[in-house]
Amino acid sequence: GYNFGPIGTVPFVWAVYAGDDTTDSNNYHYCSSCLVNPPGNREIVCDGCPGGVGAGHSLYVNIDVQNSKLDGYKFAFGAPVVTSYSDINEIPADGSGITITGYNFGPEIAAD
Image 1 (cartoon, rainbow, N blue to C red):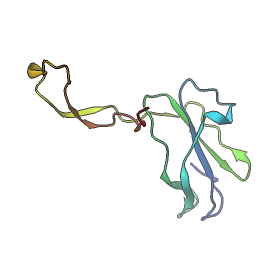
Image 2 (cartoon, helix red, strand yellow; image 1 turned 45 degrees about the vertical axis):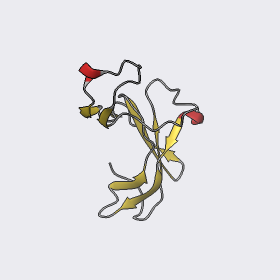
Image 3 (tube, rainbow, N blue to C red; image 1 turned 90 degrees about the vertical axis):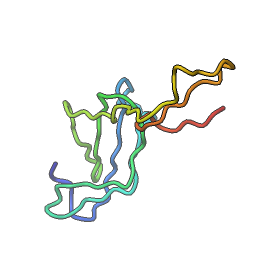
């Protein structure tokens, strides 16, 4: 984009996931440690943004109380990728299940 402000500006960058109310700040998922980078104040780099799943999510930028408008610009998290799995023809009789290995399975969720 452009007009991100002087190099070194600290913008607020957040995502609103598909289906969430964009007017409710409880639905904002903020990225951390964002800075406007050279050259020409046309790039923002963030150290981290919250993980998630799915597609059709919106990304917003706020600089000096001015919000971006990203109508039509959507992003998606990577599709799940399976790299290996235990032999599904030999599922244990005790029902203990199988193991699927890969990445992009979504954010880690603590067990209750």
